[in-house]
Amino acid sequence: MLADVQRGLETLYRIETDLDVRHFVIDAETRDAIGVARPAREQLLVSEADGDVHLALFVDDRALANLAANDPRRRLDGSNLQDFLLTVEGVSHFVYVAWRAQRKRPVSALELELQAEIDKYVTCVLTLRGQGGVGDLVPRLFDEWTLAPGMDADERERYLVANSNARAYATAIDARYVARDDVPGMLDELRRFYRLGVADKLSAIARAA
Image (tube, rainbow, N blue to C red; front, top):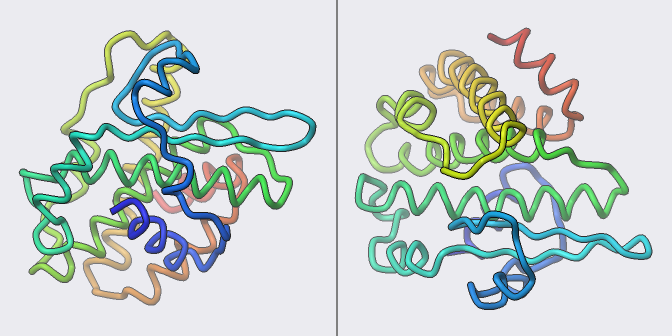
C-alpha cells in the first residue's frame, strides 16, 4: 500500500524522487529508540547533517494491516477510510520533503501539513470516482476530525490553519472541477499548486475561495 500511494502521488504531480518509501519505514521500537516528543500513529522523522537530509517514516502496523485486509482500491468506506488517510498523510510528507530536499528548497511544517491535507482529499476523489462517486467528501475529511491530545499551542494552531485552508481549497476544487467531472483541469491546477511555496499557496487559496 505504501508503494502504491507513493506511485500515485508522484504520478499525480508528475514528479520523481527516485526513492522507495518502503526502504525508509521504521517500526515502533525503532521510532521510540530515536526519541520523539509525542508518539503518533504516523510520523515522518527528519534530520539534517552536513547538507544531507535523513528520513524515516513510521505508520501504525494496525493501519497497514487493515488496508491489506480491506483494500481501499476496491472499496473505500468507513471500514478503512481513517487508516487510508493516515497512510496517505505519511507518504505525502515523505514525498514532499524528499522532492523539495533534492531541489534544495526549504519546507515549513505548515506547508507540509497543508499539502498533506490536500493530498488526502485528491487521493480520495480519484479513488472514489472509480467506485461510484465522491459524495460529501469535503465535510467528511475536514469537519469530522479532532486534534490529537498532547499538542502544544503552536502545533494546534498549525493544524487548524492547515485544515481551514485545505478545506477552502478543496471546496473550490470540488465546485470548479469535481462537480463538472473535469479531471484534466483539476490535475493541471493541482500540479501548479504543488510547486508553489507556502506563501504563494496561501495566496492561491485566498483567491480561489
